[in-house]
Image (tube, rainbow, N blue to C red):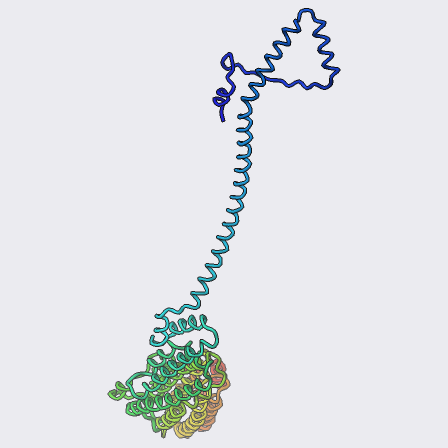
Length: 500
């Protein structure tokens, strides 16, 4: 509705002159009479003519009002249309809000429904993997994923199948040790790859887990017995240096101490059994026994760590299983030690074996491997009395080597032998060990017999003889066993007592 429409309905004279109508409110008849009296009193106004103009104006006004009636109707309709449009917009806004709310609700429902469907739907590939995939800890992750999608009743069949496959796998690996040329390390590595599966089996079937553990331990006892029997057989073929007399009756014995002492820091691996059977160079008894000791320690350490991790889940507190598994090996080890030390007078060899055992004990304690303690202590119980007996044998030999009637005042040949032998024993001894008592007996034997020999001389010659011998011992011990301060001081005092 524009100005053009109004122009058609109300054409105005004068082309665009705006006309403004003012409605005069007549308040009362007295006021009209007042206006009328004013008009009659005004002589310049012709009442008849004014009335004629008024009626003419009123007639024209009525005509214009009739023309404006359609405009009013149009404006009223336009107003009603605006009201309807406004109501429609409000309704549309409400509907939009409701649709948005419904859309969000539908989205949430769809997500929940999708999650529920995904939880219940099992991919065929997953089922095939559970039934046929090679067992591993990664396989167990798929098992857990599948069990999470099932309730307790539905999961029973899956659990039973997983336990069955794990049982068959463990049994096949145990059988392989007896029927196939495989090493225990290969089997253990395969089993360790299924550690989570075996722990799952233990949680589902504890008795079955115990039976499989006993089967493994029984098989490994047979395995180690057969392997170590072959290895000890090859070690028995190694040529050995055998000393059947005291060190005072074997002049070249003491010259080998430094090279033998190095074995305490030796980190070489064990001699393979194939190589041991072809060696022709003779070895000392401590070197031969070190090969067996290292083989037992290495295998038991690996076995202990495997069993604790695989069967006990790292919570092993009773290691009697290790004694049972290695019982035959320990027996062969004890017998082999008796074989290589039978009839020997090699006191250094025996003491070096003792020191090697101490080194292994310390290393095993640092690695928290207690399973070998009992066997090593049993070996020490065999070796310490043997060492003490050999020291006594050398005490007797020393007594025989010191002449009853020395011919001159120069130090005795046996003094140098004693000093070197004594220094070696000091370097291999530690405070609080049984060796300290035995070494003291050796020193006392030397001093008492040297004093008896010195009694041949009189006066100053006796003191000179003792001074020269004790000074030689002091010099050698100071150079060879410099850490044995108390023993060095002991011989220094003896030498100073008789110094002229």
